[in-house]
Length: 439
Image (cartoon, rainbow, N blue to C red; front, side, top):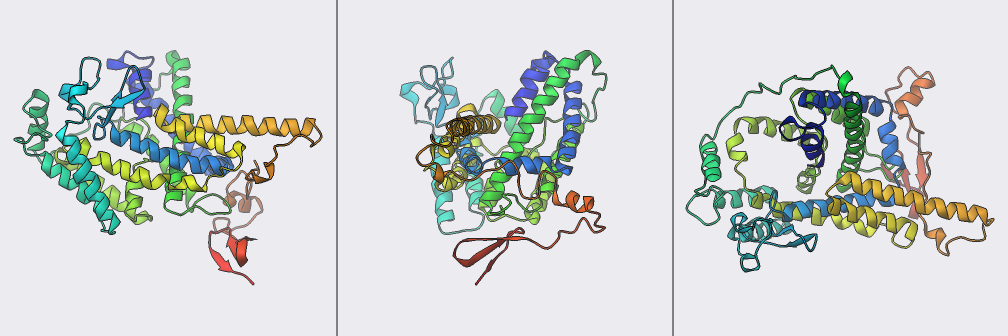
């Protein structure tokens, strides 16, 4: 939600009181999408993903897992177990939203007394975990449906539709079951008279650009790694160019619909956790989203405590990558740890990546300078444990198809014979990700 908040409260401002009008902000997003498309087509986004150190990539997956966990524990999107505090960053909560005091704190007498939270923990969390333990397909969906059905009756203390003005409004919308709201005021409203907003327009464009690059790169790589689709040699995943190009065009098309940048979503980990790893999963999800447009009253009435524990479960699966991080060398482990810590604590994937990458560059550059200045006499005692890293990746900066085109190959869109490198214990790993036994 970071980009949405930046778009709504910083760029556009509350009720249009920001630096640029809503229509001009959408124009910046539209332009950003096509810049992304060019970067993806030239392979620069893929190159950026490959040159990020392995420890940072692994830490990104773990950090996103903790980020999801934090979201699942809060009020707005989760079970409401924690809340922001004044004397400490967060505090134990678990009271009903109506029990929060004027400062948004949960009184000690009301903590852990929200029945909806306990329904979410046991029916949405423990129940789903047991189904997953026995490998029941659709376990996550079953948990969400169970909690939602329990929360819909208005006569229970865990109802999502209390007898309040907001509850009555939500229930009236829920009773419609099928509804369609046409896009009227936000469809194709871009304004291209950006001259008077040049500085603010450029600032918004650059901010959207770098945050989207880091967010999407971190998310796509983490999801691909979670699905075990990352090539161990190139540190890339199959179809990355098309994935980035689709992401870019989604941003541009989304701006025509009046939305902030449309990017890859970290909650995709829930689908991967259920076994979805192919394009068929994405197509099915898209069809379901299209159907959901007409059944918006039902899907909008799924309470946050029905999905909160699901996010915690997905987070627990994503942090498994922490064991693969090189904890033996501080130049790798500390940047990875900072990446992991900053993502949930700053509530931003991009901020975590920026912090980890900058610290990695700073530490390892200083080590290199000291080593060169001392003629190789002053080096960390365990530097041999450092993971190898190079700015030059397999295939260079440009994507393979451009290299084949530059060499004059007519069938440049077809990958050539895969090259291979020797692995451990007589295993050969090909560039296309396949493994084969060797003598």
